[in-house]
Image (cartoon, rainbow over all chains, first blue to last red; front, side, top):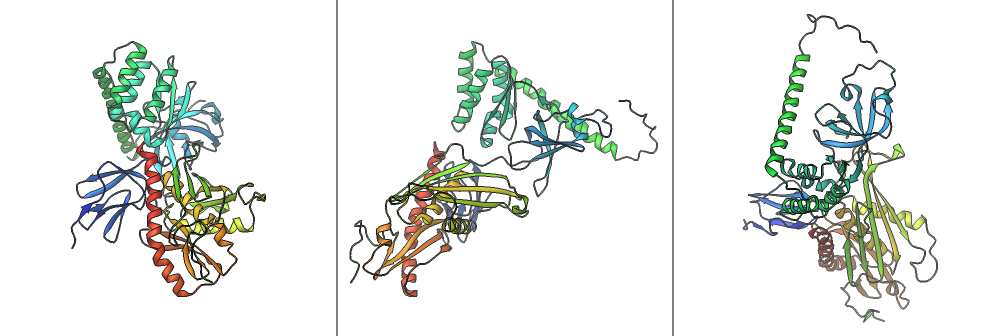
Length: 276
Length: 233
């Protein structure tokens, strides 16, 4: 057997069909495949050599829906028992009634009281089927109807950079500009507040310079100069940690609630009828 | 009479000069400009997006829809009537069939990827230029694909096998001319398009295919470099 070699340096951009490594000692990971003795790239991406595994992180492409992603969508249609949400993706999602609100809604009630056509909502994906039928939910911290403000579209491949490690980038932006910001994994960003213009330029800059190392520091100095305010990263991280705890505890609670629901109901008192 | 020297002076196994760029159309999800000699193609990819009418949807995988068009001023002086015609419909079909073997659209059931290819200038070899431009545009849009399908034409002018005919050669009048547009998966040598017009022998074709393989690999490397250049920033 011939010796195994990697033909391309780590962290370089590779194109489809490009030979990455020779020999059977290496394994093809996501974004690569084996053809005989060679491992080749499967799509445009950044190569990562992880021990014996070669993989690429995609640099382009539209958003593909994944469970637990928070996305921003527009109410496209009103269904018999829910809403159809369009969120910048080839497939639209369904927001069922029971995941939209805790209110009791009578049969045949007017659903536009809750969400009207062309309302924008931040929601979470709960299920994706093999045919890409998607369910979303509005239950969870921070999931709500988005009123006012403005929407921006960024490349969904750049969203992780915009959020930053454990949300550091977006928290810093929120803190410095005083804006409310919601970032959807689908690449839609909602901004609302006094200093919107600054936040918009910063988001656009982050999108354009996503590949530059040490971007968080650069953005921090620019923000401090623009607002004349010191940014305390420790406090932001503390705030972020609290929000993370809150999300975790919500998930735990909803998990327990589901377990409780599975118990037999016969010894529970009958619920009184709701009044509308 | 024998064909001794090509009209533009290049060697029998040389292509015309090639220029390739990715990301030239900002609104598209992926785009490319591919120029070979005086033949110039622009390709733009939009999608995946929802496909209507519904009877065209495929629940197993996404559909690739091609649109090929020569611009009205792109010919040798006569106005080319825009819009679909018998020839362009056939080309749309063969371009789609040439690209599908490498393209994996299984993640996009019931959706469509639209591919538009237009020519501001033509000088023979448009279907080959279209396939090259389309490959770059699809890679630029980030679709998973095994390799970049590369196309170039093979031909026979009088007694000589040549690569990449231009219009002057296709219209050569002193002897027989055969034109064989060909698309290949460079890494494996699979042929995804082979059409033929004119007379040639089986041995001619075998020899030509052996000669064309390194040329295809060279063009493919140029196309990959174009896609990489877009993202290296």
